Image: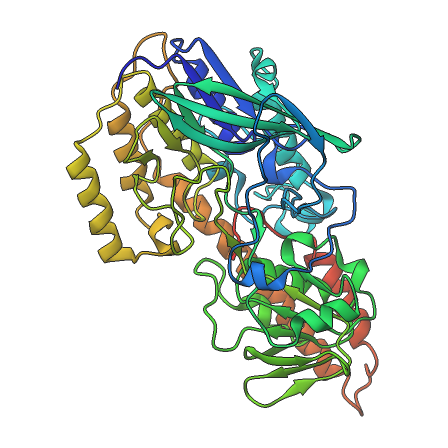
Length: 506
């Protein structure tokens, strides 16, 4: 492969942060440059104080074509007016969001997540609650970058707009875009290798629904994606429909009970629930489950469902329907069926092993899985890894397509976590004294705690749903406790709605 001395890393979220350390500890690269389009480290764990953008181009979101490349100036460096094009860099954090995953399987093997828990989490799960507020995770990622001089390697407010191979080099075109500035500054740098650690939970996917665009146009801001949810208070007294059967939609629908008009309508019937969390959240008596939306009548604000039922005077629709994989800066790399083909072990781009990915997997044992991928990528570039032939790499992908399909499930590691972690460890090669991060053998306790955390949340939902049903029955006409349901539901929401996650997306 030749000598690699200059490496570019795209992204300074959890995947990028651990990649910095993996590369630096190899002690062989002369240049490590990290480009992060947000104002600091953290990726999707950075909160946003500004209101989310108003969604308008629903056709492009449904077609998974919304994140288009910006036109690049012919001569660089250059300065241009700031583009009005939406780039989807805002995150999904809201004030009271917490992880829904035990912190132990999330944290890296050498760096521990702080034992800092919220009053809410302790009240619900006990003093040893395994969950953490999103700000704890943000500070954790910051600490990984703000050590050993790594901060000097990072260029913030910098978007990677083009990565292309020019002979033996990678040409990387960059755009500096500060919020306070009305212009963009463009330039390019050259590298021997590129590591893509930019994540794939950024661009919303909203399926096509007849009448949705007209509904949204009549009431700007009435249609949002789950990544734009900023808390229950924005929906107080509203009639809300939540679309999606996985984690984001479950958390939001549950959160809105007692704040939005009752019931909250959840579009889940006929759809697959999340493998880890199931349908427990949607069993609350304050949630009315419905099948897919057939059409929307904007004038009457009526949502018609596939079973012939309808809900009128709808104020807001929230889509928890997942995200679209996009790589607008890599025109030479295909995105197919919402995954990136030709990635051996989800890391090595088979057409060019100097292009590597960290984080190109779906939910499960992240952040920890990023560490194994980052070490493998670093050792490949340092010439210390044991990669099989290109033909064997191709067979690996073909076999996986046969077993998992050529879609999002291709990147789902569950339940073969131990096999995957140890395979990457073997490919990365033996440790070398004084060089590189040490990768331990997979510890089954990581997976045990991962699954126990899910059971904790499901138990919480079951218990509180049962309490809500009991309170509802007591409040029926003739009951001595008539009228107590609203209070019970409000108490329930105070206890439960502060939990959500950014490890899992739909």
